[in-house]
Length: 540
Image (cartoon, rainbow, N blue to C red; front, side, top):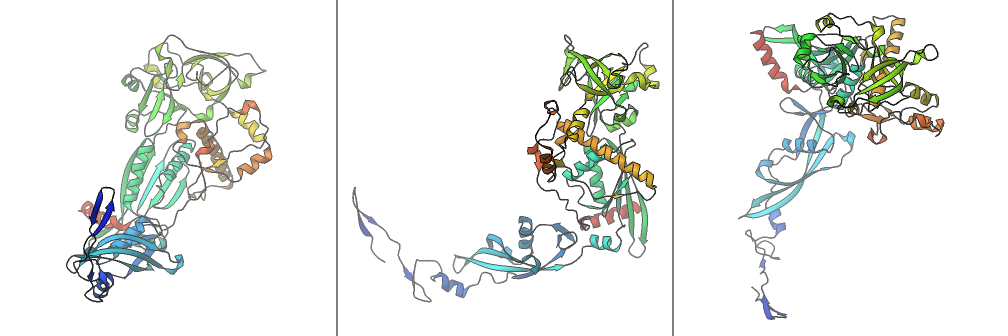
């Protein structure tokens, strides 16, 4: 071994030790000492650490639902060159448990080649403790194989295992338009075989019972509902004692919507501290919020409380009357004047239809003190003309009278009308579900009326999205590529009075509008065994 070389420094002469070199026992090349006594090339020529590791594998791929088979019968969805697909491929390689995996990645292949290639780097201890690192390529042959769920759907597109029937007994479909956006935002449409529109709701069809139960749980978390289920025997095999059922889930949404007014049952009023009887529905989620517009007291009611003491809406949004605000003054002194975004105020209004006809002026108390000013228009209920008759009113103290006017929200109808006349349109659009409309049983005139009603409901829903910031947070908005062209043609001259019309902020819009739904995305087969066991137990 060479002796240490002296090295001159500012502190004197110091010696520096240099590593010794030995000769490789195979080729005689000088190398640093190692436990094997051989250079790297000679070790690789003598030892192959990839021996016993599978170099070529076969994977099953269903092109209908774009999923890969993970034996024995679990199907997973993964994109090309994704982390999920790389993990799936590595787990399919036999023999990797004997070595240490250092690095892994994909090698690019043509998408139509039906080949996947991974480049793996491994380490292993060889020859007296020496660690050898080696890189190799594993090729996966992709074979197309239709999964059981897709096979059933291809054989009979109407074949389903679970059906979720969602219903609401109201005259409009704004609730279902909002529910449709929630389903799209959370990806709950991915496992459906089909979606069918009904006059009073929607039907969701699934190839798996668990996916229907998942949809029911989702609905219970976003809207106030009550659910019940039933099952029907389709077939029975006496040889293996197996049963085939069809499951139906009936989900009924509470027939109360935002901006409705209700007469609260006397017993429910007593449980809420004596509020009411006239209440305005201000928010709807998994439960709905009712507000007393004269005292600003707010209470929440869920579906179970509602169905214990059910009641109906005394007036709905289609009965709105437009008013002009003549004067407004906030209520002072009382502590109940403010509640969140509302402000209690005394207001004087007149019907828009009465202008030039009579001088009728009505006084009322409203919760819209923060939103209204003299000269604004507002939408509300003309309670004097509605003639609300409810048996529950008689249970309250005698002498109680309902107000003549109940204002609900500020109106932008005239300003929107002027903007449309100038060609200024919305720069956004909403994603829609692919559904089948049940128009076969209707005549031509009925279909035309149904389409007109649907168009009116969509316009009312879009206006509600523009006015309600909390509601917008649950919806995905997409840019309308044609809208900027139309608005550019309309010119840049706009009336200053129309600037306060609420709009969806441009920064909240998403690029691209595509709904990737495949017919084969019915469900995963990993729950089939559990379902068969449950069905046998139910039969026993």
